[in-house]
Every structure is written in C-alpha cells, then in structure tokens.
Length: 377
Image (tube, rainbow, N blue to C red; front, side, top):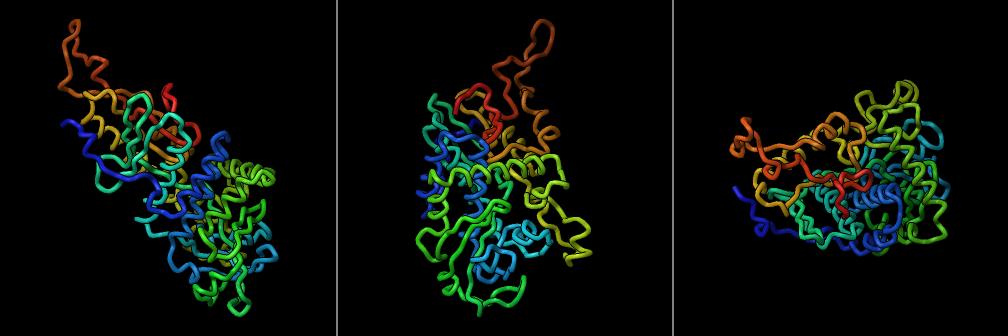
C-alpha cells in the first residue's frame, strides 16, 4: 500500500486557541535561548494551558496559609501543595486539576508542535492532524522532505496558581473555597515557581489571562535573573526525575514521582492510597506505552512509504525519554528493517539492498537532545 500524503488534512497548531499569538511572542523571544530554557518555557505554557482548559476551577481552589503574603489560596496540577512543601516541608494533599484526557492530549500535542514549528528555522510548515489519521502531524522541511510524526508530550514540572480570594470565601486550611466564577474573575492571581518566587498575573478575568501576563514577564529583560533561577531549578528537577533521586526536594514536584515518603502519611495525614503524580504523567516521551506506540506507528507508516525517499518518520516530544530511553529507545535508533518481499540473491546470500531498508524512525524531534541524523531543523 502506498501512502497518499495529499490525503492528509489538518490545521495549523493552536490556530483554534485565542492565545496563540501570545505563545508566538514567547517563541520569538526563545529563538536564541538554550534548550533547557525552551523546555522550561514549554512547562510554563502547559501549566497555563491546563488552567485555561479546565472548567469550573473555582470548585477546586483551596485555602493555603503558606502562600506568599498577598495570596491566600492555591490550585495545582499535582496532588501536592507546593507552597506548603517548599516553604514549610509539609506534605499537604490537594487533588490536582487538569483538563479531560481528550482535551489534554490535543493541547499538549499542539503546544509542542507550535514550539517545533516556530523554533525550527528549516521547516516551511507544520500541520496538526490528530484523529484517526496515520500520523499526528506532518512537518514540511525546506529541502522538500515531508516528515510524518507521532506526537507525545508532557511537562516535567507544572507550576501552580495562587489567588487572593475574599476572606469570606475561605473555609480553612486546605478546605475548598466557596466562591463563584464571577468572584474569582475579580481576584488577583499569580503563578508559583516553587522555590524561586511568584509571577503576579493580575485579575483572573483580565484579557488573555494567564498567557499575556506570563509572556510579558518572561520576555522582559529585567526579569532575566528570576528566569535563570527558574531554569536552574528546572534542570535540578530534571536530574532528580531522571535518576529518581528521592533525596532531592525537587523530585516530588516533578511529574511521575509516585507516592510521598512515609512521613507524609504518618505526620501530615496524607491519604493512604494517593500518589503525588503517577507514571501516566511521565515527562516528555518517557511513558513506556507512548514509546511503544510511537515506534509501532513509525514502522507502520514506513511500510507505506518505503518507495518514497522524500517522506520520513519522526516521534515528536518536548523531552526525550530520560528515564526509559536506554531500554526502550536507544536499541532502535540505529536499527534498519526491511520486507521479506525485497530479499534478493546477492553473492550466494539472501539480502536486502540498502535503498530498500528503512529506519525504525528517522528522527526524534525534541527540545533537548534530539536525534536528527545531521539534518538541520
């Protein structure tokens, strides 16, 4: 079966979201930045996208006495209250909020595709496909190559939101607020960067909240030191996540950290069967089911395009498989495969000529440590 590239239809990444221009402003600023800064900013954008796409957030905000003084309540995307943990060492359980899985997958895919499109100088176009098509996306390179991509992405760190709610709405420490959506829209807000500090985001109901104030802050030159500290903290979390270093405080703020230590249950009343963040939230390409599916999809596509040298395959993510790469990705990076029907007799041996062989995947396109095989994106 031959692959019909012309039959694939899709859309420009994030075209359906009113805040896309804010992301583009950020990506223009990121053009000359280090990979770790780009990866950190992906996590910031995803945290903003989570709260934007989650309905009824006012029902999940809880009072917190450990927030910085101008705030009094917290909403996060892991089950651990970061202000309690980072400022007091207290393991306060607060159920995470996130969009429904369908919306979440679409969001994370389109955000990373927009990052790749705007940060890659050699790509002419990127189309988000999704649905039941053979590929999640098509990337068109300036050299005429079309790259069919499977997209799997997820943040390493998420950044919670803080609010300054009316005292009349507070019900006690880590009790849910009694607040209406219209009341919340009048509240001041901030994004909490764990051990570094808070970005003030203004009123919840302000235009393009929270994207515009976040991008305004990140792109202002006088905030460079704050951002540098955030990136250093992010890289510390990446290291702790990769090697599962539970002695590093940042480990428990990263996705896929599992359950808290025993003291959380014994001293702070952490619910017995609850984790902070389970393996389904593994960062980047690190969820093993995603790796397996990505490799399968690349091979499946390859069976249809083996006679089309200008069509390549890729797996796209924000981060490589830092935990599981050695076991699940590295064995396939230099592997070639072919079809039995292409066997020919060569000097007394059955062999497949190189032009009839394909790679398991041609590229792994990520913000850090991509596999590009001498191709410039």
